[in-house]
Length: 154
Length: 436
Ligand SMILES: Cc1ncc(COP(=O)(O)O)c(C=O)c1O
Image: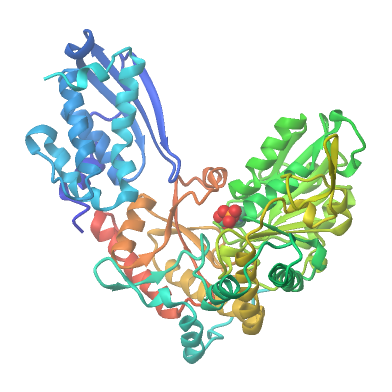
C-alpha cells in the first residue's frame, strides 16, 4: 500500500521527540472528533516574531499511524528552526496534503514529510496528517507568536 | 432469542434476488475491487423499490401535503398518510402515533424538548415537567443522539442525569457489578429512562421489556432508540412496553431525510410542539396560536413526503421478506464473523463474543494497530467498514478503546462478504509488522 511508506511506519513505531517536556511556553490539546485521535503538544520558543527559534516540540499523541508519524516528523523537521522556516514547512505540508495527489511535496522543504504524499489521495486521512501541525500552530499563537506575519517572510 | 443457526436462511438464489434490489452492490471500489459493503449500521443501501416509489410520487403526484384542496394535493396527502399507516403497522402502533421527522436524532430531540422546565409554570403535564431533584436516566452505551439531548435537558431544567454502566462483556450493568444497579438508579425521582434497543457498537440487544416495566413501576417514561433494531428484527411497541421509540429511514433500506418517532397517543397529546410554524396549528391569531392534534402538531413545515413514501416502500419490501428471516440470516452471519474473529488471537471483539442476545454490529480492535489504519487496509481491498468511535465516545472510553473498527451486516450481506472481511483483516499484521 503506497499510503503506508516505510518512513511513516518507522516514525509511528518510534516517534521522535515524543513525551512532554519542560520548559514550554504553551501547551495545547487537539482532537479529531470523528475518530477520537488526540494530541497534547508543547512548544518552547526563544526570541520574538519570525526570528523566534523553536527550541523544543514535545508531545503525547494517541492516534493512528498517520497522525503519530506526522507529529514525529513535525518535531524532527521543526526543532531548531525559526518560526518563519517552520511556517514555510507547514504551508508546504498543507499544500501537498490538500492537493488530491497533484503535489508530490518537496523534500528540500519538508524532509521526511514527503512520505505523506500518498495521504493526499485519501481525503478522510488528511485531518490525521494535519492534526499535529494544527496543534503546533495553535501552540505558537498561545505562546504569543504571530505566525501570520511570518508566513510571508523569506 | 438467538438460536444458533448454522445455515444462512437466505439461500444463494434468494440472496441474489435480494441483492438485485441494490444496484450499488455491483460497483467496484479502489481500482476495480468488488465492493464489500459492511457499514449498513451507519447507513444501509437503498432498495430500488424505495427509490422507485419516491420517483413515482415525484413524477405523478407531487403537491404540497396537508395544504390545499386540489386533486393533486389530495392525492399527495393520501399517499403520505398511507405511508404513515404502513409504518404504524410495521411497529405495531396506531397511525396517529407515528410522527415523521428528518431522522432519529430529530425524533429523540423532539421527545427531549417535549419535557420542560417545571418552574416555567403553566398547565404542564406533570409527567413531562422536570426540575431540580428530578432525574433523567440513560445508559453508558448510548449513541450521542440518545445522550447529548438528555444532557441538554438536564442543563435546561436543573434535573440530574444518571446512567446505567456497561460490563466488561458489553452488557448493561443492571445488577451493579461495577457501579450502581438498575434498582438504585431507577427511583421515584426518575422522570424518564432513555435507552437503546441494540447497541450500534457492541451489538448488544438490551432486555427492553424488563427496562420499560422497571421504568413504569417508578412512574418514569421510557424512550427507546430503535435505530439498530428496526432494520433487523420484528418490532412491536406494545410488546416492548415502551412509551416512545425512534428510528431512521436511511438505516432500513429507505431514503435519507426521513425518520420516525412513535409515541403513545396520550403522551403525544400532552406534549408541546418542538418546532412550530405552518401545518402544525389549529387556529392562529396575532395574539396567540393553538396547536393541531398529534401527529400534525409535530410536523411543522412542508414534510419530506417523497422520502416518507420511499421509506414505506422499503418497509413493505422488508415485510414481504419477513423480519424473522432477516434476523435469522443476520444472526447466522454474525456467528460466522464472530467465529472467524475468535480464530485470530490478535483481534479483540468489543462487545459480546457469542451470538446470544446480539445484533449484527461487530466492533473490534487489532492489538497494536489503530482502527483508522485497520480500516485503511480493509478499504484498500474493497471492504468498507467503519472506524472511529461511531458516535459513542463514552462507551469507547468505558471499553478502553480509543477507536474501533466496526463491521455491520444487513439482509443483503453474504457469507462470502464476511469471509472477505476476515481475509482482508489478515493483511493488517503484515502491513504494520505486529505479531499475528
Ligand atoms: C443507535 C443509534 N442511535 C441513533 C442514531 C442516529 O441516527 P441518525 O443519524 O439517522 O439521526 C444512530 C445512527 O447513527 C444509531 O446507530
